[in-house]
Image: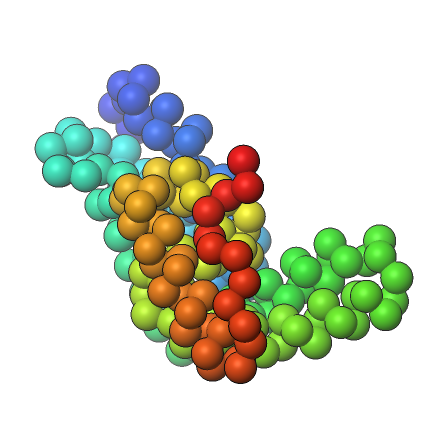
Length: 180
């Protein structure tokens, strides 16, 4: 069935969220191809239901909820947990390859405790930490992706950092606001 002519607003939405959605799905699925396929399916569903999505009080939040639902469904079909700790550690290692071996192993060692602690956070705090610190999105971008306010992102970030610091027995560093 061919797609109907889609409004420019859909393509703007697609352009704004595609990469973030794909990176988020990749972190959980651990497979870039599977992540791309899943995000394509989500966006096609949104395209086919665009008029209904635009009637929602918060279309970005509704689209984010659909993405999360589909990622969770895919993980359930596969009978496994999210790949976030392994994928995130791999991303850190790839970034650290240019640094010395000693520094690289220090990064890996600290990540081994940090990422499982992130995975145990409540859902919204988890999402904020993944988007902000694993995928590197700003507070503003994280808020747009999740369909929430910047204040909500900062609040979830602060609460998550407090829980993680307490769990890992570490001092709480500077707050979660961007250094922009």
